[in-house]
Image 1: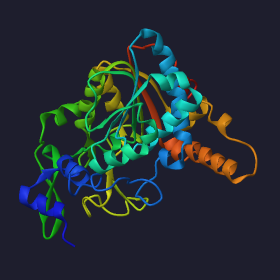
Image 2: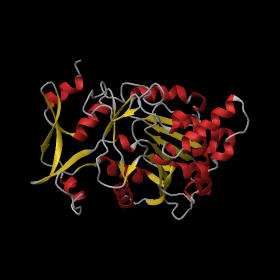
Image 3: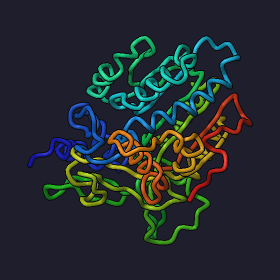
Image 4: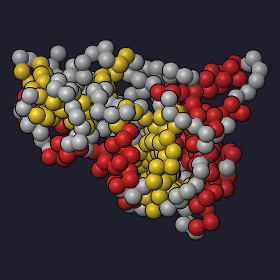
Length: 359
């Protein structure tokens, strides 16, 4: 079947994996995320903590309330909740529902901003958040200029384009994507950006090594740090411990079932986050690393188990199953990491990160 993105690669010529991924995921007419109001869940291609139900958002509201308590006496005039990569707004809605019910003073101070590149998802977010219209400041495609509060990035960074590198007998080279023989093929070429060589300059990489590097994530971290006047950045994502290939396509809840070059625009492309590079970028941007734990420890420290009802009725059973899914070892509980960066509130031991660890 004719694929318009493959045609674009042929017309533009060989491009980096980062440029190809940007095209495949975010092209305004044919990109994977641009052509749907929701990509996750049972009918989608992957499953996130938000798809489990409102419990994940409820627990985030508990952590956000603690941050608000710390900042509320600083007379900022409002408390920002900014979700980046907000999709159709379900997570922000779950947080606002909980704040309205359990933390009414926080709710009165909240100013929610949703940042989402996809026009269809932004449109859907207006409908999702209609009951909280007076708390929603904006739904747009760019970060606000000044933030006093919390920024949330839930499974955002793993969708940032990455450059694919390889070590050859002639030194470090980059993988390019070219349209040949009716399909897409990898081709080795020179580095497209000198920063790529600088990042791995101190690494002893063997011949044949392949790995991914993101130049967009550090830039994004710097933008967030510049906008964050005081408060926290909370990231939820899959991580790797170093330069190792993790680039995968996800379709119908199967990761790696198809190659990430297959069917551009019709499947998700994801890569794990290099935790060391992320910490380095945050520190260089003026943020402090305030915590990094498995999601299991984060949610249980915030009191998730106390929110699971007893009883055999269907509502109670479903809520307990949701809780188990969020903290299950080998599932979201251990594969999803929670990372907290702060600015202007250094030295605070946030409840969700006390006593937790990475596995």
